[in-house]
Length: 495
Image 1 (tube, one colour):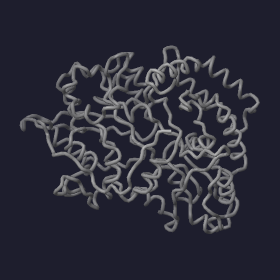
Image 2 (tube, one colour):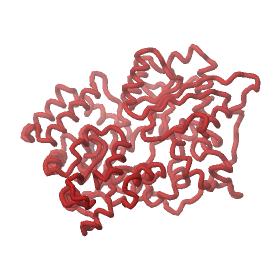
Image 3 (cartoon, one colour):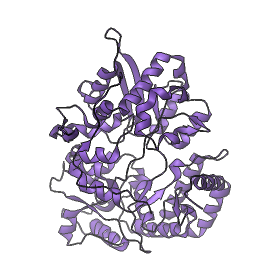
Image 4 (cartoon, helix red, strand yellow):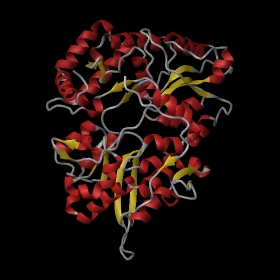
């Protein structure tokens, strides 16, 4: 299985000379142009615009008045409301590749080929992602390169120590730890108020599927140069049977499926309600989130542990997309009616991929957040770690992933390396175009609903084959399988 190897010793970023190439220059007498960018921002905590170093820096460099409409949850619903009402941002992120394809085929977004010369910095920054922005031979999106895996299992070490438990190794060990965290009063308050496992909705169950060597429902991966569609693999049924018993034992947060935001998981951790989570190093180590985690129990100690060894000897650190793009930025077709605004929106994206724009959106202000060394490398200053937790939401032009992470988050270098290098199920779906006549949203909804029924004991596992048959026929998943096989073969990834 392909792996991305990181080097923990990397402490500086080597960069080329700063150049502007005319970007950002505007007539002093011209009024700043209002530009709106809309995207999901997850757990990022944005400062007030007046205190936002990156927002102000972009405004000054490009003579714009930028509004970042950052959506913390339900981004898909909110952008669809905007589109349905004809109220388009100047630049917006497609919720996923399926939506991006639909936008392109419905004529909602504009083609970019006529503006290739204006996007040279973007093209240099994102050579592998740019082809993912092409639909039916036409270029529609300044898609950005994929990153590396951030996620892993984190456990309350102080609870392990209190109960005399070792760090779990096998899947059975994980279950035993969760039992002890639930029933053995790890916080010593004499109350039955803790659970072993918590997380973010259905995604929290994914790393248990991968412990069986298979992806979660709706995930396609490659094994022995053949495509594997997770729901059809017998190991998925095994994983569901294990999860059914795991949940039934009472060790899982009973509200886990209702959790929609990462900050909700953090709140449960901070309140001492759960002792094991599937999370990410940014959520566990960024200073603003560490403050949340220790706000109630200052002595709580969360450590990263290796993923469990499953019953077949698999040890996968979850599932991670290795085909596709990180984010699909698109431009409404209506923008063509306003050439000045169109060109300024394109300039914003390309500037963010230029050396000065990349430095600004990744590392902040020179002399405040970083310094440039005599050899041209960058060195982080303390303020970068204090202020920089949200900078990434402005990386409209992509980024140099490993270099960026190792400089900006040096305090988490070990976990960046461990999570990034760990074996994982490599998912292909984000790079597979959905075929005509197949409604992926309906199929995904059906898969999730039925999988939850199996896990929570509301549908008998004896009916699993019926579920697969209905998915493949009534919901048209067979069409998707055929399209995925053809596309993966064309890419040379399968025989």
